[in-house]
Image 1: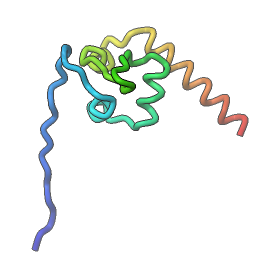
Image 2: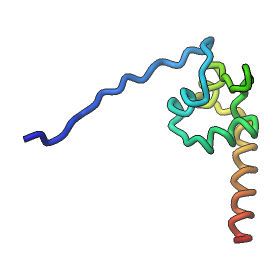
Image 3: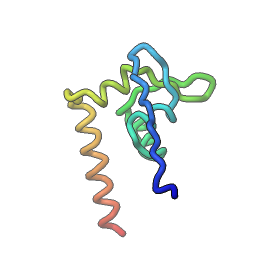
Image 4: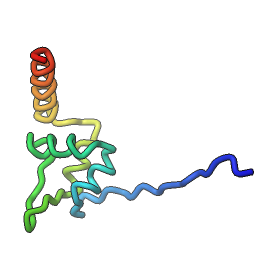
Length: 91
């Protein structure tokens, strides 16, 4: 009788000089597609458009994972959170 199946997923190392797609970035950060869009729109992650598609440098991903988060990132997140609270109150 088969009780359970275990999968071992190897997580790739994020290389600062490599370019990643938004999907790869979402997988690293374990965030949703909508969260990724918000982060791109609000400048939390700097990305470049190539042929109409976003590309993200590895060092941009590593900035978010660093224990020394930029003050700018925190301020943007705080503003988004406050705006979300205001919208919810209106409902």
